[in-house]
Amino acid sequence: MKIVDAKVVLTSPGRNFVTLKVETDEGVSGLGDATLNGRELAVASYLRDHVVPLLLGTDPHRIEDTWQSLYRGAYWRRGPVTMAAIAAVDVALWDIKAKVAGLPLYQLLGGASRDRVRTYGHASGRDVPQLFDSIRARLAEGYPAIRVQTGVPGLKRVYGVQQDAAPSGDGVRPVVEDWDTDAYLRSLPRVFDAVRQEFGPDLVLLHDAHHRLTPIQAARLGKDLEPYDLFWLEDCTPAENQDGLRLVRRHTTTPLAIGEVFNTVFDYQTLVSEQLIDYVRSAVTHFGGVSPLRKLFDFAAQHQIKSAIHGPEDISPVGMAAAIHLDLAIHNFGIQEYAGHTEQTGAVFPHAYTFTDGYLHPGEAAGIGVELEEELAAAYPYAPAYLPINRLQDGTVHDW
Ligand code: EZ4
Ligand code: CO
Image (cartoon, rainbow, N blue to C red):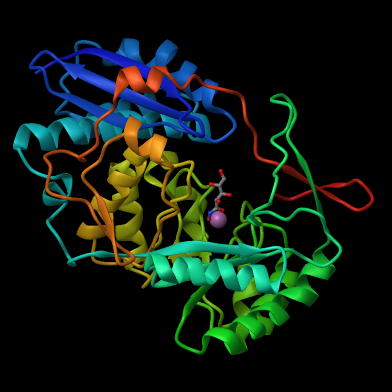
């Protein structure tokens, strides 16, 4: 079997996605997600200009060998652009292999370790009443666990909080949000206190600090949130310096989740081997694919750390499907983030996976179980869009 063609498809059915479609001489094709929010064209070029020419004529069944040759052969290893591109190839080849086998991908990963995949959804509000409405909406959708983000008194716009009329930027420069760590540290425990009083002790609650705290601030927040029994506190501090997590860990029993911006196992080495975190958050799409993520989960399992694959709107249904197959198969599954997608996105990427009563299942279609409607995709051309940036009240750029 040989790869005879591979194309990169950019589409924006509500938001931008980058998809790789690999075709073989036997008519079987595979899909991979290469979406890197705000840097989509860099990955598209990496694939089109530097990876696709290397794939043509190779055997799609040699997944590990292809992965190693793209990773080692480039000389310049790691980084989000490189690893998103390699991820798309890896997932497309797994899709092909599973289709040839006539099996859903999870069967090739060892078969199901559970019946269904527990998720968490996103609730947010500028203030507590709006937050309560949002939590009720997620509960009505069946979510068994909920990530809670709120506005901070005195700040105009805060990450993760739905706006009534969100400015979209001018397509060149990102929107600027404001930030005040002290105000956030004061307000968040009060918000969780209100949520516990309204919704009781059993609701599974999570929070994402989005890298905005120093280790000692993160330690304090973890401690202050202990009475509210969080499932986890996510990205409490930027973790390029993995040693910083030792300080956080020494001071709090609030479970910690990290890793959505990581792209190789080396980003986790200290965090996992010293058991400084409880959940690893990498996505198939940004970690080089199913092959290396599976290895990360095996490494994490040795330290009683569980999976929690990143699943925001900017992971395409192709990346979500690959995640759900892994979630079903691995033993040390923790939870799957699931933000869902717009109807237009669902129409561009029809998929076999299902979301029922708050739980996902990858379905039984051969492969990863996602199609790409190419004509419809072409009707939604790429449009530049960026994540916001944060500035403190004196204008200093802050961690995002
Ligand atoms: O901000 O995917 O846990 N989820 C998150 C996401 C990220 C976006 C960035 O592109 O933090 O919502
Ligand atoms: Co996050």
